[in-house]
Image 1 (tube, each protein chain N blue to C red):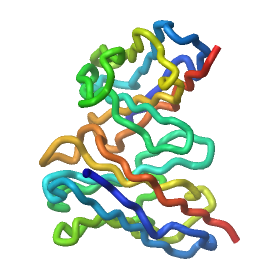
Image 2 (image 1 turned 180 degrees about the horizontal axis):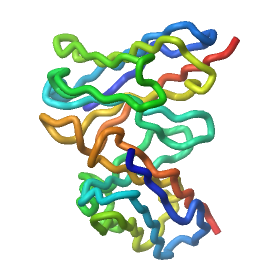
Image 3 (image 1 turned 90 degrees about the vertical axis):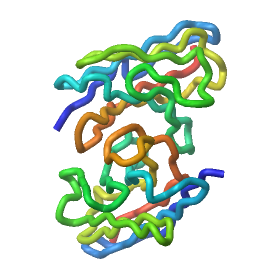
Image 4 (image 1 turned 135 degrees about the vertical axis):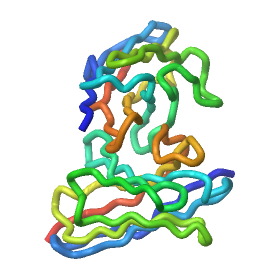
Length: 107
Length: 122
């Protein structure tokens, strides 16, 4: 199975900050990488698919990049509603493993 | 409105069975793969199982293989998860999720239900 890691596991940031979260796959997954946002008590929400494609309705301050084994989610200017946990997920092969998550909270 | 609604969760003793259901609406159900993803209390997301649009391709996580069975009824726009030989470590919130790409088991999950809680305890 493909293993996914994320860093950092948590971070504290202020409104307006630029935030970067990284995700690494244990083997090449081409661009089969997705990013989700989850707020407490809510279902996950798809933000980015295929490494860099913005899901419909997601603000443009979210962006994704990378291919192969290394990927990045960037929030260009953190907003109050962005404080949440972010997960990457590979869809290259079954099982579609998720990363352990990165919690973004208020500094 | 595109919607997924899970049901069937509850408290069950170890070794017993439970069947989860997911009712879909607002999209052409039989065009897309469907998945179950679970989240243990305070933990991350774990993909459990997925089924292609025509049930021709099915996958399971190693942790549930041989105990859980995924199925779908396209005529009823419904997804199911039959869970047998339940263990304490199966305790989690179980989400139903829609595959984003028509015709394939792979791809992102673009629509999620609100989840149904399964608690395995004596």
